[in-house]
Image 1 (cartoon, rainbow, N blue to C red):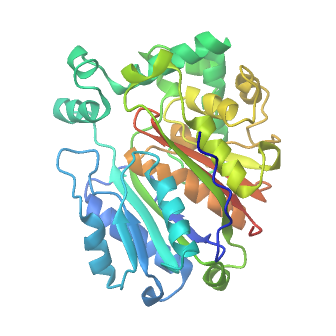
Image 2: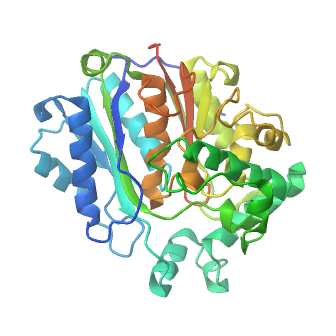
Length: 397
């Protein structure tokens, strides 16, 4: 059995700048231009010359579509006119961007780069029949799932139903996650639901059923958008900002690719990824001030809180119902509104919680700043098959 990685990172890699486009619909802007816009915003935020950037990580453009551009990172490097010592494409669904930060940190630690752009942007296409079929085909096992008319909410619903059976979690517990997400979104002017007002558990349960146990308000909001972070050596990061978000530790886990291949429909990988991140950082769940957790559906933060060791099994629902994770609570979760309240820009939305977590640690959030000496960010890709955990902090290891 392999042991968790505990080696120290050299050169104190840190997120020195983090930006995100406002989520919404951009019918007149193509995906490539969204990338240009977010990279321009990142360079402006960092305030450094482009010739000091020597690395770039990006996914294939349109990676969820039928014709992905698998050399898109080369086009971005050329457009930026940088001499890249470190550049590649990474694709792991929503976990892509956590893996980017990990790879950039390793490259900086090894002296292969000093400043690496990690970027993602995209459009969550509206579900015309051909688009929906391609998206489902990408996520499904061809013989056991796709042929039987599977849809993505229905696939996730199987995980949620199993989790609810195992833990006694209720539909009210799931709804409380959406209520908390909306409460944070009301504090974030960029969130899609910012002006829509608060919601209650009863209103979530009264919204139309999508795939039991998910009601409409249990689901994330499809949109267009993108985000980027600059991972830099500690010396450069401190030139860029008075308070970098240091990468203290990370972990990842790669499991089954499809729901039908998951043993007993129980999710694996979250705990393993988190344990590696805690071991590497020298921190424990008790040392973490807040968490940003991928929430394509409302059950996901509950599972993550428990598997990462924050909440006891079967108790995460109590955290959300009691207000612990909401504004004013003692353990804030998804302080930007989450994908449920802020918006879900397809796979690129895996950047949203990294941008928020980094900006919280850097103290750059004006409307919803929380205590953030340390932050944990967990994202997943595929059908909860790829897992990434990051621990960020205000002090380098």
